[in-house]
Length: 92
Image (cartoon, rainbow, N blue to C red; front, side, top):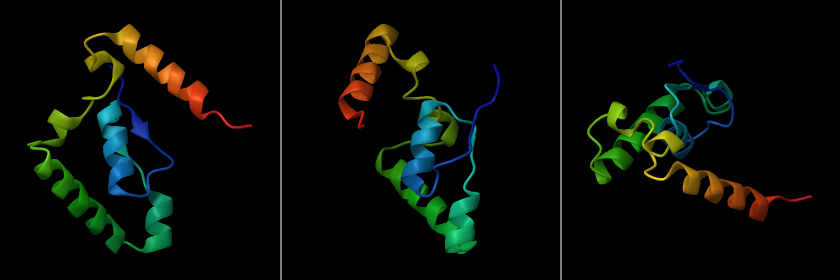
């Protein structure tokens, strides 16, 4: 029942959306704002809004956690797929 916050790697609307869909309650993007200026926040919000409208999401609450293991109809299959992806993308 704890809230989750994504605290690194959030620079774009896509990054924020991925974190929210994985179950984060908030995303933090300090580095992106320092690098791109405060106006970047408005661009990210507009991009998020466009993405959500295109996919017919009506709220962040509807989106939040939609791709989490808890929302999966077969959590074991989800876990296995993530494990296989990690193995296939691992680089030394």
